[in-house]
Image (cartoon, rainbow, N blue to C red):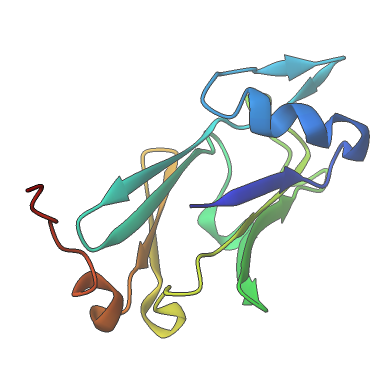
Length: 130
C-alpha cells in the first residue's frame, strides 16, 4: 500500500522497492536507519530505528498524501550510532485518515500510527464462492 523512496541517494531509489523488507545498514559509508511498515486492522504502523537521535530533531510532515520523516544533526547533536541526516518518504493510500496520524519515540524507535478512514475499513468484506 505504501510507495517509498529515499531522497538521500536518488540513484538507489529503484533498489529501495526491491529490498524494502531487508536491512541494509550501510551503503558506501553512509548509515541508513532501518524502517518497517506493517499493516494493522485500523491502518498502518511505520517504525524507524533512530538510536541516539533526539525526538526534537525529527521532523514528520504530510503533504499531498506523502508522509516524510527526516532529521539533520549538527556538530552539537551528532551521534556515533546514526547517520548525520536522514530523509524518507512514503506515498500514503487515498483512504488514510491524515488528521489522526500520531507518533511517539521510545528507546530509539520512532513509531508512527497511520490510521485508515472509518469508511474505508467498512469496505472490506469476504466474498462467498459458489
